[in-house]
Image (cartoon, rainbow, N blue to C red; front, side, top):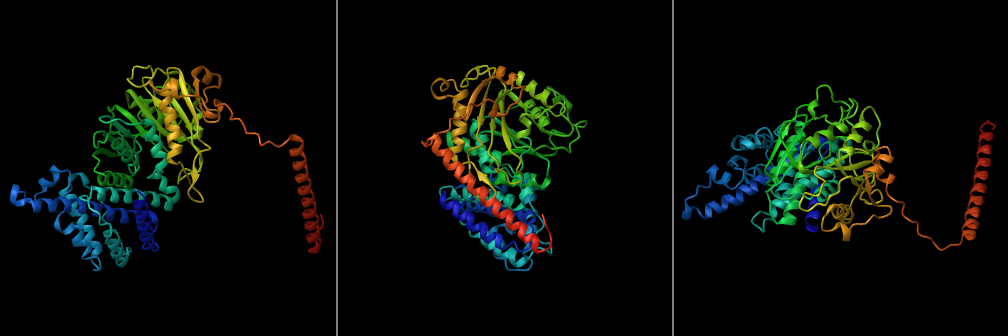
Length: 512
């Protein structure tokens, strides 16, 4: 993994040097499109070489598209194969060659139709730098045949670049990318099981799904066994999601469209909802939204938070759980109907756990965020989950995380484990009695009666006991002498500065 990280950083630094004056939002599609092209070409070439080697034994035709479809590998026509394109990287026609390659791939692979970027021939794109970028990406030479690592390397590079572009784009970057530590904590707490359905109605570039597959692969040693459904309203982000999932070999049903206005999966019921919808959206028309979902109250037209929550609840099957990222204001807002809707969600026992997150976790906003975990079937009939009716777990994680740059914080794997282990122990039939306990300053299992007394506000700090402050062993009298001496010195310094200001003002003809 360390080697991967170093490779990703080196590649990013080299690729970023080639950006010249191009905006990150534009350059993103240039680079990610080429990484995707390299991936499908490498995967094709692996199988092509195998078919050539066994051609005499089984009569397989290396140019038969069906041979590739059967193995869930994209067929790449000769003029789109990486080796051919890299041989033309120094030619002035390379931009058109790539556009033609993308067109050819889409014609031979119906699932990629309309997905791949095809704007490499535009005059504004420096063809010399494009050729250098092709050579750079061509340096990722590990193939899938080497212990299956090549696809992982290209997948990790694609994912790493998504994060770096999100950082470079700032606020706009958050529209397509949720920071990986946020995705990890949602997935670890929901702990998706094989053969279940997962849904994200604001799926961005698909990171939630990638992490869900990875979770199952790590814990169950199986892959491709969950059914994935997603919807994304931004056409370019939708294309990124399709490429991101394809590069991972993840089969998913992703639709383009505005989820709240035009749900493309109206009858869908799922086991897990995992989502980071846009915070505090005000430009949606509540009158045109699909009102059958407003079972717990009509959301205000100035904020979509409670529209999203009710939409996701409507998707949950029996025993279904949802993990949703929202702005902190959603936990306590009384604006319009929000307080009443929150009350209804609580009284209907749909709220399972609330988590306050540290600040500075997101690329696109400094607004403090929280996690809502919603659940159907808290009655203990689930084979592994205890009866937790009329209970809500509150977790305050604001003190966790470490700064990874001047402006951004990240939750470590230990931070994520601390939060998710607490939740799993709390709801587990097997572990609750022995492994769960309220921790002052961090978590508290509260009753709905406690929440009623707090006017249905769900901010964790309202319920969690204060952590005891460790004594430093210094006597009170000694502390006070030190503090008063410091204060006296500071006041003396302040007076000196005041006098200096007066003197300087008098020099330029002003008197206080």
